[in-house]
Picture: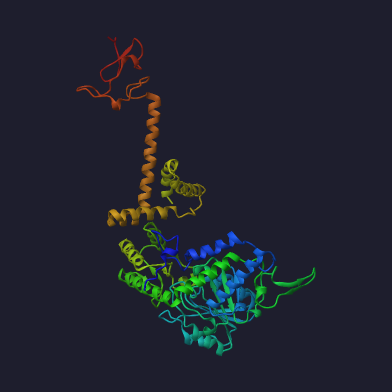
Length: 381
Length: 152
């Protein structure tokens, strides 16, 4: 199912871009929305009473509503951060104390592993739930390990191979054990239809730059008030004296200082753009291309990681992965190589890394065919 | 790492004529500088050049591309050695030219490569007036060698 959107992406040309899991491209609509801020009313929101200030305030509040609605949340249930990494760090800072046990999966991005490892220094315990032999999430093992833990923080869709964990089951089991659940949805929200209320996660983090938007993070929380801010300053306080301060109520105290207003406005434009196309259509398109790519790579004798067909194909060629990536670049195909910030997963399996080709709505069957032709030449090395 | 030595010279010259090679020159310079300081190279210049050359060869001959890929390190060493040898020969040529002039002898302005060769000639049309032989004692023979005797 082709999606006719390439004309909206000004940077798409002769080169093939297969690195959307790192950073997606931006359509003209998002670029224009951000430029609109700079060209028409580049002022502060929520502070100044002049006309530009009021306009920006209105635009950012409307944007907040749009972004929250995109994931099925209420306006006051989301806050803006720098990225998913900052959101997860905020959770690590706020939610757990000495003696608490945090569970993650064994295929986490460093941003959902390192904060918990770092928290060990203040007495927080961490364990990774090992995958089953077929590399799927082991729900039985998880059910044993979750008892007595304070928080489960897991990836929804892995950036390594696009595998989606059984999140609904994980949340159900965790909640039955009275354990909070945080979800790293950086690779999920751009590619799947996510409704946080139906999902039931207590916290969910995602990034704008992986979903056609600018670099910006969004943190959803059922009750964001339970989080303590780790960055304080303007907009986090109702009142200060030289000796005291009074924090704002609600989630807004987690957004310190001036925000990335063009980013917020741009992300809302990205949400509208994706909503117009339809997340189901996007998911189906990626799966078709992903299957075409995976089949082609397996026919060339490449080991493709991951237990399921997804829009992310990580594979191990016979030559050095760095060399493969450089050669593909010379041939006009841009991919990612290395350990994709999942060092723990690769190190535990004694693998040096992989080549990752990640697809999105603007990629086509023809691009996948060209990529497979190039890989056929590289496979002869 | 070795290929950056070749890259330094090649891209240093090419960079004089085209801006697109200057980044490569800077990268290879950084690599060579670090090697001179006995530190490891922190750019992937060699890897990039290997990929570039391999992909270009793939269009011509997959077997050649494969050979280049597998033996790039050794090929680089061969190129570096050849570069130093040819540089040495070049310096030797400059030295000989300063010392002996061209093959027409010192103070001659011809460039004998372009001189026409007559049948039976030695190929070096030397002009006795510009010979380096001692006055009155020696003169040039057919082979442009200085000989004792009275010159005609």
